[in-house]
Amino acid sequence: METFDYAGTLLSCADGDRSALRRLYDEEAGRLIAVALRIVRRRELAEDVVHDAFIAIWQRAATFDPAIGSARAWIYTVVRNRALNAVRDGKRENLQDTPDAEPEPAPDSIIVDAVERLASESRLRGCLERLEPEKRDCVLLSYVTGFSHAEISDRLGVPLGTVKSWVKRGLAALQECMA
Amino acid sequence: MSGGSARDDDIGVLAASFVTGLMDEPERRAFEQRLAQEPALRAAVEAARVRFLEIDVAARPVAASAGLWDRIASGLDGERRPISLAAARRASAAAPSAPTRPSTNRAFWQGFAAASLAAVLIGGSLWTALWPRAPRLVVVLLDAQARPVSIVETFEGQTIRVVPLGNIEIPQGRTLQVWTLPDPATGPVSIGLLPGASATTLKGPSLPAPKLDQLYEITIEAAGGSPTGKPTGPIVGKGFAKAPQI
Image (cartoon, rainbow over all chains, first blue to last red; front, side, top):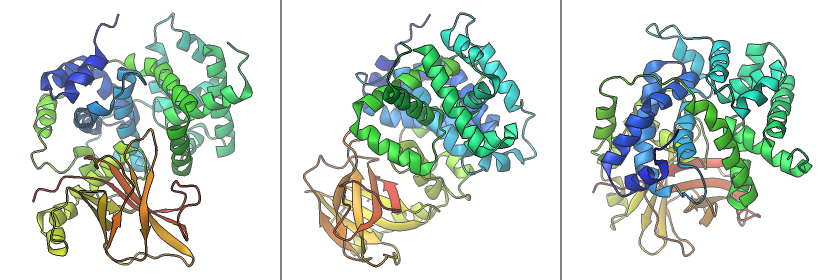
């Protein structure tokens, strides 16, 4: 059950209340690092992403408009965008070449885990599990691990055009199921 | 309901592609322009964000390193801490480009700062030498390779001064147009055209005073300016407004 007041916390941040940012950190940092880690795949970099995201949240809290959207989604979007930027343009491969990189789970197991972590009664989970496997993989590799079309194409060993079509149909089927 | 119109479905799929991060740069740019003008699209994006958020919040938390909070806290004061750590690590690589996406552009800026070039520009008195009045805010516009191409200084009274850093190639029959994004909801606003690649003072339309981190960019447009009133051409450079410590 969620009782944390995300919107109120952002408003307090906008007012310059540091203890509000600290509360948000205590509440969400662990999950936000996990989300960044699924995308950037290196612990150190995931923490850097979350570090930068918290600074950005602090600086931009005033731009959040509770009338327009979910505060929690806004916060996660800040982290996701930073993580995606960190791996764009093939930097993911470069990053993995560093000798101190920890062994990391394969993308396939990351996306399987992501679905299994959803509550068993989750509607989203039910809809994801109802998708054809290749379309489900496309949707999850894009959202969870931040893969581009080209990366998914490499991963699944199918042409780019096929991936684009699977992604589109997967997203459409998911939307239909959730509607 | 499952009988939504084809257009509703399209919007939903488009919004989901945006939220998952699957759009390439031109698609994202076009989409963000539409986003600024279409409330239905904004609602679809918000719905997709909330839908997919469930996956993120179900992630197994990873314990933060000791000291992460202290690093964040020490970064809050703007105590002349010009670089972001993630940006610093990739500073030597080409920065990605996403003109209307503040997070990207901030990383962009910070990556540049990490390369110490910004420190040189800001630490020096470049603009005070060029221009006797102190600007309220200064923007270093970077190209897609994170090279500085121009400085924009903002002054009172909707006036900006654009100082190109080196020659900017303008194709025949085209012009440079300067834009800013005072509010993502209303989209980019033209400040004016640059007659050439030399320092130019422009008086823009009546807008709220420029804010910290407000986006500025220069694009190449048809002679006379963008026919649509919004940026359509290639981006010459872009950056976020920063407060100079003079």
